[in-house]
Image 1: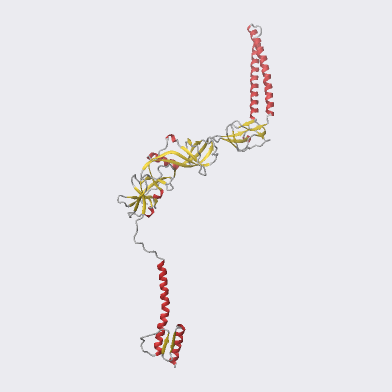
Image 2: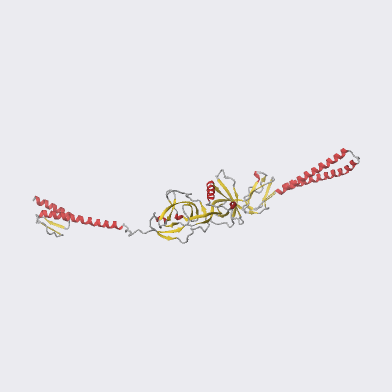
Length: 456
């Protein structure tokens, strides 16, 4: 009885875990949904226990195997198929050439009026009228302000009256001397009388000249009441308004006029740039025009090129202690008034050349840990690294100061995929000249400077 109770308990447990199986322990037979063959003839309860355990393991193992297969498929889907063979990279190769290349230096510049004058009051008086529109272009001789003329007209009349009196006195003294001199020659009058007549004539003549000077002074003062522009240029705003009392001196500033045509374009060279150009000229890598006669092209902030070109007309004799730069000034015709004083522009100085210069595309130059380098194709058609010293930019190209010789072949496209001595699928670039050598482009300072080293 005790054994049957234990077997029934086991059967109930198996039925709970394996619902498809039905076990009849009372008859000693096992019946279920799965046929079992070739089992050893053991006692019923023991045989049923072994069968139940086998079916329990089968039901648990099948889902685990299924899940493992699914995860294996998913893991296999994420892997790329292995390439059959490594193909040589496609690269474009050009032959290096040397040629004289025009160079344009680009600078940030600022315009300046070629002549700027301050319009000031030259006499004291009241300002009657302003006769120009502030900010307009005024002509030389055009009236800008009119002062009250009446006091100066009265002063002129008074001076003219004084002159008339002195002229009359001089005429009397001159006539008296004319009568006394012959009498003195005949000893008809004393010598003292002659001396008095001569002295009176000279005094009255000097007084007349002084009166003439006073008249001229008053005439000038009267003319100064009409204030005109001494040049053709752009006028500024009025610093004194109508009805103001103005005096000569600092307080007499009325406005200013700036000449627009021609106009100055100022830019600066740093000390490092000056030394660099000097060394390049000495080494034969750079050639300036005679007397530094550069042609200057001006470009506005929006990219507009000023049609009139200028010439460098001034080089500062010394460096500025405040900025450490060397001032260069160009004069540019400005008939249309495109340029205004104080405007920031770009100045392109043209006229220099680089003899036998080597230019390569910027994309052909790679930067290593300590220097720049290019890939050179050797005699066996294999790539090898070559350290180069780079100079200024020239459009999309780079000047090469050291490291390359004319006739050598370098990789200009696909250089990032090249390995030392590795196989290449070489495509020759169209033409043999260095790209960009025919067109003059602004030269900018290389951001890397003149880098050099033993290895990239």
